[in-house]
Length: 203
Image (tube, rainbow, N blue to C red; front, side, top):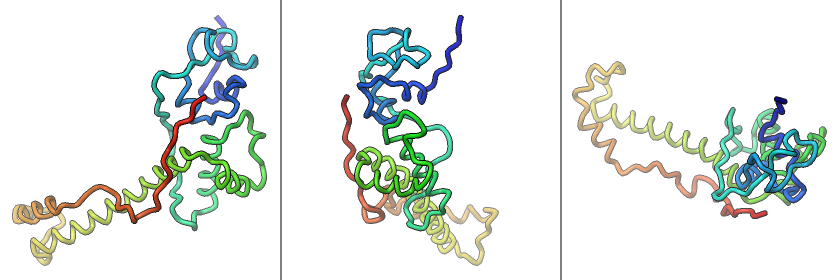
């Protein structure tokens, strides 16, 4: 038996010409590899070109990214390394490519800015918005937690409140008041600019 290594990126790089303009994310979302040759055939350099082929999924899949979360991109003052990581990640995920040479070694930021402005698909913008929403939600949760703690302290008499919870028995009314204040986990619409609606791509 001959072992032929393969991976999602390897499958993508050697995807058939009919999927030339598919991004890596769309490739994983809409297509799956099967052990037959009745579908779209891989390019000849693919290790499984003679045994496997690609078939469109009956239902689009949700691609899961393993590893670190994208950097917080809500501010214009993002550190250089974080900004570079963000740009590289979005390009790899949403700009069609076949080799490393499809991305410039120099002036990547300029390349990214032009691509993002003129050619980035709506799904890439929604993806970035969703990533930023994580940081927004985390900040709101932290602020809400701090505000609730201040309210809690005030209602049980801050002078007598103990951080170790030793006087917790006197705080039931305060806790109930905090829990039924009508607060919501939803992010206010005015907290960030709305993203365009995502649209599906068909090949």
